[in-house]
Image (cartoon, rainbow, N blue to C red):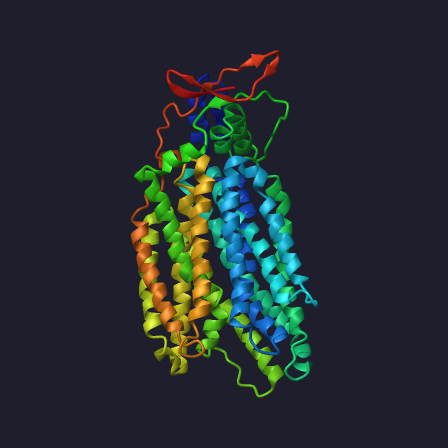
Length: 555
């Protein structure tokens, strides 16, 4: 269809008298739109946030090793210190996902988008400036700021998922959302690259430090953490200026006139126009209330979907964060890249370098290929099939790693085999469940609860991450240093097995519109503009009255 034909069709939509018909016609234009620069811009603006999120989350795996050298006399952080700096962000993320998920449905996607990035930038920069004092411990200060940063990261999940989902055409929706989420792989890889660069840059200074001291490692972890705010600063303007999604404008704000105009403008020009003086006509549509929320999700056909998305994410993040935030510990436990130097300072440098390079290998060998393998198949194979395949393969891989853990420490070839399985686990985590648990909750709920539903599902995942971190910290040294890691991997296999069951509760979302997936009748979803009640020349706010015995809204 030519651009002139598209404009003519959109003008026809504007002249349809029935608001419900206009809504469905406008949604059809979004669902059938050709891939355009606007779609690319949406992916880039949302994706930079996930790049920043992953960098900030997983950089702590390397930074924790540096912190141990600096603040614990050349040793490692205590179990509680290590747990604190690693679990603070998932706890903050848990809070942010619930809070921002709800707010994005209440006040709008556009109004909240960018606020979470400001929180991330502030929290990240503050970590790099943390210091100790008579009344303040530097690890304690880091924990506080990592929690605050986590709140912002949590807000990014539902907002980016829902915005990319609601702007996407049906046939490319999976790939658009996957491309957004796939930036996590590059963020993880970037953290490992930056860590390697700063360690190499300070090599001479680290080697020149007094024996057992690590004064210049302090520079390394601060640079590693602080540089995480740079991509967020670059993306902030674009987030603050992204348009509201037409679906939210129609279904929640009930302004069909503005939404159809938005569709016309962004599909033909890729820009956004807003007239603050335009007359607003509020259509009648189902409103998000506590009673309506309970009524909707108390139906098994809807409740089982929320249960499926939430538990699948919970089960996945048990293993995803259990490995991702402890990769340095796992690599060191099997002796991969351990330093054989006699000099204490050379050993510090070698260990930091090997840990950084090891994380780079894991990102390149598993994380990044996994995300983009999903990109290739998510709109053809289907989300549900891909997720089932992933959980099945992860069950097998973690069982192999767990039951063979002790045997794989006996020789260098055996250690290399363990690293290969580690990369394979990263690959299959990201080739399916990690990506699909993000995509599906952004598709299966109605517009008025889409962000809330995604926030609940994502928060369930972060609860799994919290459980995983606490469990990993308390269990790994049972029977000796890092002895129980093999059994922890066996537990990961069990949770992957349960993820297969929760996936069976989910519908296949491929090639279905968001309205078809909402389990709500779209015929007559939007009713004519509500009557305007005027008293003494004042237009009254919406109120509740009963018409024919049923609650109706008046304006």
